[in-house]
Length: 278
Image 1: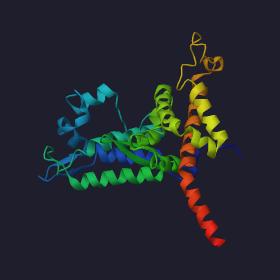
Image 2: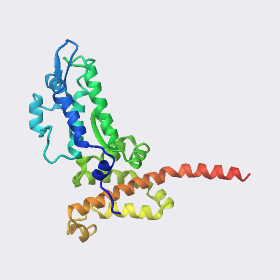
Image 3: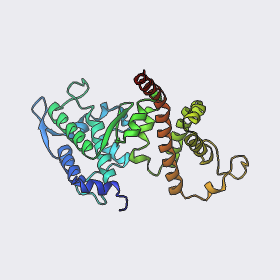
Image 4: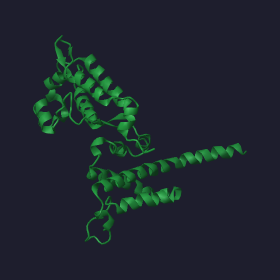
């Protein structure tokens, strides 16, 4: 049997992501609820009326201005709908709504129940499709719930834990530059532990640092004039091939961090096993 893609898995699980999107769309754009003053408004209307309190608005002067500048144009029946469209809408709406709280002294005409119900609905949908929420600098993103990535994010330095999870974000797909930068950060974290990793798993250490040094990650392996680092095979790779190898390198990094973290655990198990022989 061939490998099923993620969309096929969702379909097999009877999760209709388009219908989930339309439910959220209706909750955000068309259904209204009374605010504390008894005035009925949609969530979109609340966000629009309080747009200037949103810290990530940049220099935009209205929600329509923001949508136009960042090319957000959500419709109930989108052409070419896919999972990324749903995730983009969830991130868009959640990041605005979390600032629209009656507890926020700068916010006017807000309904706590309306907001809480919407955010809970988004969390339920995100959970159903196997994704999870991450927050960095007060911005919410939704990424695949990859257990190995979550485990590693909990043991690496706090300043890079977000990078471990962000790598799986849908906007990273096709973005070679961002993936390369993340892998360079991971290489810097693993370099001081290179010898230790080699004593644990020599082949893994060899493979992961081979990728760092020969796949245009830490060094410029594509410029012919750079005789020490130039690798012809890299110049002949398509962007898709290179991205695939970057994704493989990311997986190797996850394994390397987990191997390093397992050393102390292995020692404890060995001590436990030894105590049984007494």
